[in-house]
Image 1 (cartoon, rainbow, N blue to C red):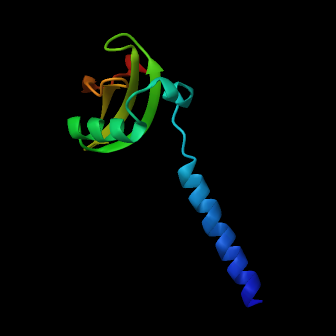
Image 2 (image 1 turned 90 degrees about the horizontal axis):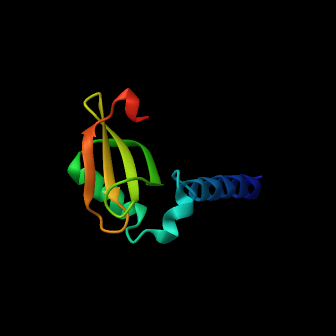
Length: 102
């Protein structure tokens, strides 16, 4: 019985670890073209606008190199969109998100 319990707990922990590691953002298929990793881009975005990231994507869009990470960051109830160039790490936009931007 004790061995069975240990196996179940071990499998649950493994499943949790795999789930956390496999977190994917929208646009992951473009990651090989980006010089800046998503973790670096998150750090840059949160320095530009501290808060909690609620959505993130890697996309082709006008401005900068054309490939950018886009983050929705919530702080004090307001949502901000922060864009980070995926090749240079430069902040391309940092403005309140409006309904038209979605």
